[in-house]
Image 1 (cartoon, rainbow, N blue to C red):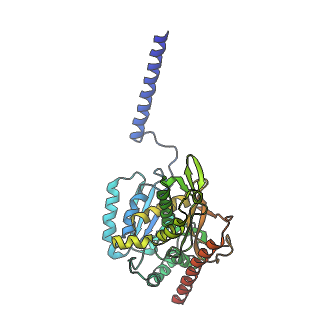
Image 2: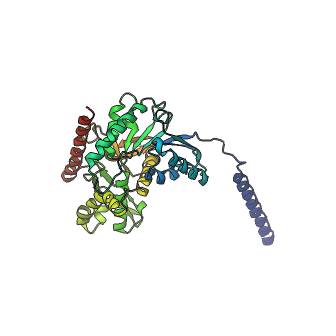
Image 3: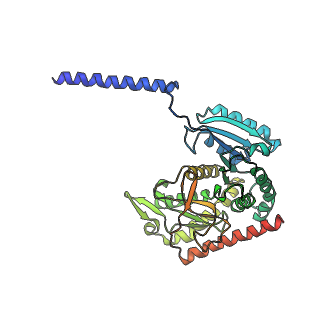
Amino acid sequence: MMKFLNTLLFKTNLKTKIQTRFINHINLFGLNKPEKVNKPVNILVVGAAGQISYSLLPRLSRGEIYGPDTPVVLKMFDLPRLEKVMAGVKMELEDCAFTALKDVQIFTNPSVAFKNNDIIIMLASFMELSANMVRADLLKSNISLYKEFSEYLKESTNKDVKILMAANPVNSLCLLLIDSLKGFINPTNFTGLCRLDHDRSIHMIAHKLSVAVNHVRKVIVWGNHSNTMYPDIRFAEVLIDKEWKKVMEVLKDKEWAKNIFVPTVRGRGLDVRKARGKSSCIATSNAIVNHLRNWLVGTEPNDWVSMGIYTDYAYNFIPPGLVYSEPCICSNGSYTVVNDLQIDEFTREMILISAKDLLQERDAIANIIK
């Protein structure tokens, strides 16, 4: 009887293996097609010939926002003199044979490029960040560029387009677009990239506590993407021995947070520029992908992300009408501010310093475009 059962079991396992191999064989040649094919997503990258874009485009083409089963139509826009550069990048992307990449299109005419998009990533800048860059000069040089872009966005055929500002100064340029496009595109469809500062904070905490980066959550970066931002770890948690604990309770070096962590996060961008002579490209492109994936798909359970958003009255001491980084929970392209956190006096002071920074930039823009 035992011999019979062993023989039967062997034949059953063999049949299962053959069926599995046959199914995999069918899938390999595309014969077992899914019942539903996802609608292609049109992603426009503005400033597509730049270095950040060069790091970003392969990741978008791989389907890292919605997943590899959602086709991507990648639209590249830049100045006419950079058309040849974009053509070279297009060839490289095609040579990668990314399964998610449906098409790559090149544009030098903004009136055509800015129509019919689902996602727009703003990278374009008249000036490249350098170690000795004066922020006021960067702001002044880019205002006219984004004021012009706003006129083309008014002709957008998709009023639900999601626009991510990643060109510096991020918060103020994002606000410029929001103010210029009121009545055309909802302010909640714009966000500013502060995820790089958020991710830097997570890495520093993980490194300090000798844990994996995915074992750190609930970090906040408040304010402007500048040296006045405030990385806040009072609510941050770390997974130790299968239990989530407050970072501030686990930290033995209490002065580290104030004297090392905050200044390092604030100055990391400048440190990178001094070291390599150029701004961060790999980390910025990674932050863009992380930001978009969380915003458009969703945040992890029991966690939040830092996003530059159009302020309302979630925290009544933050002036309304700014683009300010706050903790957000996201789902399917919408976000909600985590508005029930207890803010102590020191944190409130740091938040207001960064808000003052943004108010000054807003006034500077108003004076320039008069």
